[in-house]
Amino acid sequence: MTRIDCKRCAELLSESDNYLILTHRNPDGDTLGSAFALHRALAAAGKKSTVRCIDEIHPKYEYLWEGAACGDIEFEKIIAVDIADRKLLGEEFDKLYGDNVFICIDHHMSNREYAENLLLEDCAATAEIIYGVITSMGVEIDSGIASCIYTGLATDTGCFMFSNTTPSTHRIAAEMMEKGADYITINRIMFETKTMSYLRLEQMAVSSTEIHFGGRCAVMTITQEMFRKSGSNESECDGIASIPRKIEGVMIGATLRERNDGSYKVSLRTVEPYDAAKICARLGGGGHSRAAGCEFNCSLDNAKAILLETIKAELK
Amino acid sequence: MTRIDCKRCAELLSESDNYLILTHRNPDGDTLGSAFALHRALAAAGKKSTVRCIDEIHPKYEYLWEGAACGDIEFEKIIAVDIADRKLLGEEFDKLYGDNVFICIDHHMSNREYAENLLLEDCAATAEIIYGVITSMGVEIDSGIASCIYTGLATDTGCFMFSNTTPSTHRIAAEMMEKGADYITINRIMFETKTMSYLRLEQMAVSSTEIHFGGRCAVMTITQEMFRKSGSNESECDGIASIPRKIEGVMIGATLRERNDGSYKVSLRTVEPYDAAKICARLGGGGHSRAAGCEFNCSLDNAKAILLETIKAELK
Image 1 (tube, rainbow over the protein chains, first blue to last red):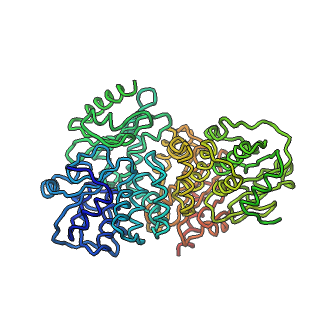
Image 2 (image 1 turned 30 degrees about the horizontal axis):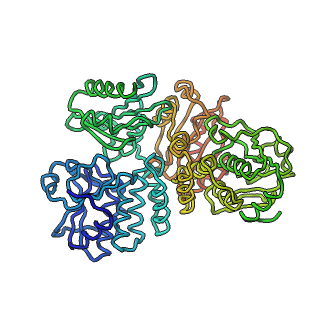
Image 3 (image 1 turned 90 degrees about the horizontal axis):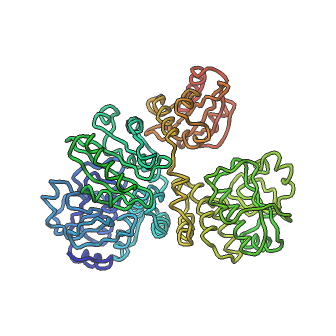
């Protein structure tokens, strides 16, 4: 598979008329904002497209497709956005579409290069790359596209707080605000609204937090029981994994989330110089240098023990 | 007193050689970032200055004056930064300096115009105006100045989240990052560090939260016992009063904080169109339209009952 740039991606997109745009499972603001920005831009260029995700999309994202609804279409080509690995399509979608992804637009270092690959690892969000593609397509950015791109930028950077934020992220945000992105509403929905059930979950998760290695590591656990008791669910938990690393003195923060099937999803957040991607790679996972993930198919105690051993080696 | 622009301010600053720069009491990132950015720029222009504040400055701001310490000097002129009203100098400083402020650089609509006034109300932070002044002075922005300006921008906008953020705020932030602002460390210190004791307090406070009037009002209580049990204290609780209003569907969020003497301080946060100042005024308090406060000298139950009755009338 070859690497392409935004200009080449725009050229390739001009060659067909009907696209299926795929987002990753457990969809977040960047994969969704990117997908619907592209969907809107393709429509502006006279093409048809539809966005699909294997998981349900949280209703808070509704504004992304407001006035630009996606119906069923006969598609010719498949675009994957913000999907580093075919597996992240979800099993069923991977089987259905994984072999036939035409272009992958992504910013993850751990990208598996399974398609024509527009991969820009220095971008804070895939939405930054989508901005480049849309500009290369010659499509004028309207307020709908601007809100989608702003959503990707803001959600993948914790509202311009995380270390992945670059001058370019800020400048594109500025332009999107000028093009009519409804940033006040978006910021309120994404960062300033919490459900009572989420707050209860956060409370339980914080009580579970263990501090290790002289305060340099914190491990938080979210169990299925906590989901049940709080009434919360995965779709509300976007930002929860950042909590352990926020504790004063903590350099490596880990969140273990129990899945339905009893396996554990680990989210790792680090402070420089600790490399989250490197630690997770040792455990079969991947991601970015400050935020990465991996999985465990064992008991919580064993998962924690293995994780802590790997972190200990890194802290030395 | 006359209104001046950045260019005129730079001209006026060129006319003397020794300045006293004053910040407001309870100093925050914008007043301090603005003051030390100006102090550093004046030094680069071959002038002497010193920064003073009536209150102690939290050690987390130390990087603002690192390598640019302020000694005692004989000053000719006084500059006030981010100070809308002389009273905000603090009583003693107002008596000492209030009559003789030469230039006031500020962004508050409520500014009382007590000096040559560089007032730009559309700026999210006074640091944005300082950026304009330093540019007009012809001083090159180094990493020290960049970190000071970035601090003001980021802290006064909740890291670019609040509705006062503008495209210009983002663009200046981008430039400051390029000029060497240590934004990763600054964001971590300002937004991403919580003590374990604070997290414990937050947890207890959230469990205390009651929902009223069909989910439109949330009331959170923080008792002295919670402070004792968590090990936290008032100085860590800057943002805690915003929690109840963040709950989905809540239009009016109230936090009752028990004081040492057993009285209760109420912080009210509202969503448009509900007026926090109006509600608090009915209870003998005051503030802004979205954030206001009042006090109760009675039992918690009575305080809550009176508060809820007043809120109920407003919600009707």
